[in-house]
Length: 407
Image 1 (cartoon, rainbow, N blue to C red):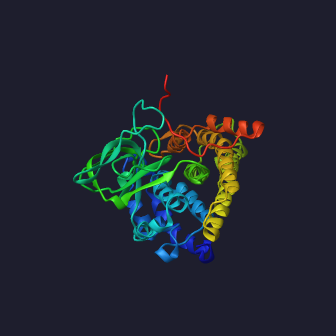
Image 2 (cartoon, rainbow, N blue to C red):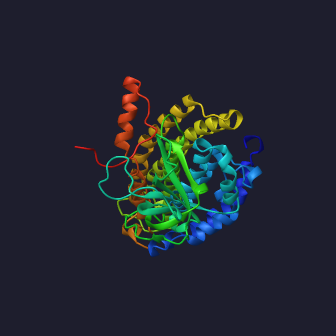
Image 3 (cartoon, helix red, strand yellow):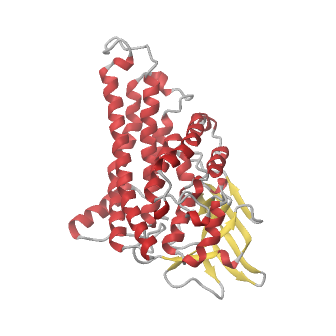
């Protein structure tokens, strides 16, 4: 794939008009809480979902670095959309990193044809760490999937859903492996509910998904090993960080656009109009610096993941040293940029008075969305791991889960 990369210019010409169209409706979608079905369709029709699918399977064959650059641009247009597609792109990278290459082709072809994959992983409740109630079970009628998931991001937009589950039957998952099941989103027994009530990322389609005795093709039951080094934790987290970088860039763009035409000034301010006030210019300059730093951090991690991916393509393996480096760098980028972007989401209001608070402008969505993204894999845990690594040389945690500890 790396020998036949599309040019950055070709990708920009292909997708920037789509991003611009998406950005035009972003504020109104947020105000109306209108799910972005049209925007996802535009992206799928343009081949965005097949960015990382090799050309031989009908995709665009983009590099890891190109992929994350475009995610930043999409996040600038509408920060709900990179998160909504996070599981889609994560599924592609999981195929490359953790699934037998002999099983890749049918799924890559589906994606090249425009299919979008969603997620159904997390379950509510006080489960023990690592325990799942969702089960795929072998029955006299064939394999059946039953369970309920929450935070199933992107599934309302999806054609297929990847579901984490326990496997019960004559072919259990190998020891140390996690089973996941690929289910058509409109299969009988699948119910998707738009019940995400968080104050941010309202349009990422992160609601409940129920599976009631859903028939499963045994070829659609896969697994991956949860031991050893993997790029997947960094891949998923870097999508959030790319979205945060996109938010930082959107803050600059929208704040400058807010200031530019304004005539009203404070009597104790400086400048004939706000655009000439050096204090206002300073605030926007600080916002610009945050956007630059966030973008640079994402690109730095993407280079490391890209280097690992190129080794995979040449040699059929992922080098552990680069995977460790990517994991550490992702944590460093997360700890370094989260607070900066959150501060930018508040600082932008220093350029204007009450008119900046109007709901019709939805400038508050930037902080709300950034805060919601920052709540994934909270930064204090990442900072502690970085400190442990710096002091004691402790390696990163590639696989983890949530739940309650045994007494």
